[in-house]
Image (cartoon, rainbow, N blue to C red; front, side, top):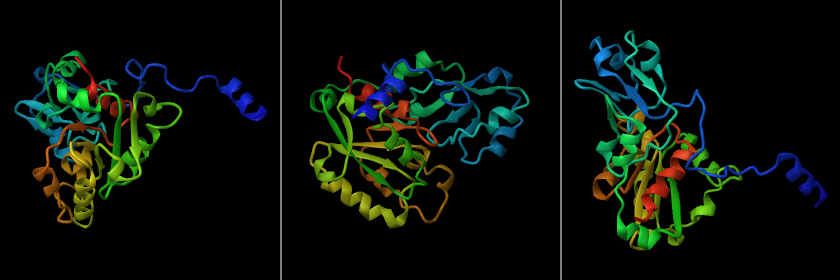
Length: 252
């Protein structure tokens, strides 16, 4: 007991007091900043992008495909692409993850997640999620585990990852969904009582990421079931996950 008290005194209060206002420093890459007027349409960014996340006309980055490697920023001769440290980049519709010129953090936040009264009324005080790693690399999985540690403490908001789909209100999926995991993913979904929600966490889950052209994938789940929240990242950051879910659950 004395050792525990000594550690607490030495380390102080470890949890982030306000996750909605926390700061992340570089080299973290969050919301892209695009200046299309600078773009000369040389196409170098497209040739470098490993996940086909960039389009030229108009110049845009799809955060659902982007792995945030930063090659486009480093190699763009006109410096038309950069990344901010803004981490509140979750959205409730797939097309909202496509960032074009002129999109600021304020503008993105205003449109990213629409308040749904039925969601906040049912899940607003407690949300239990079953996490399924559908052929993930363990990057996003580790970050989801970190969401519950002493620093981020997602549980204080009533949000928890549980051991069984029968105890869950929804799924949070990581990984590109391989053919070998497709049936297990569907079984987990069917085992969750209605009403339920589905969250995709990470570029692999949202689009397949760098594996999107692989013949080993079986992503029909995304076509069969409604996706309620998209959380981009490679891997996802705990603050992106927590803020995305909080905004999704918020009341008017």
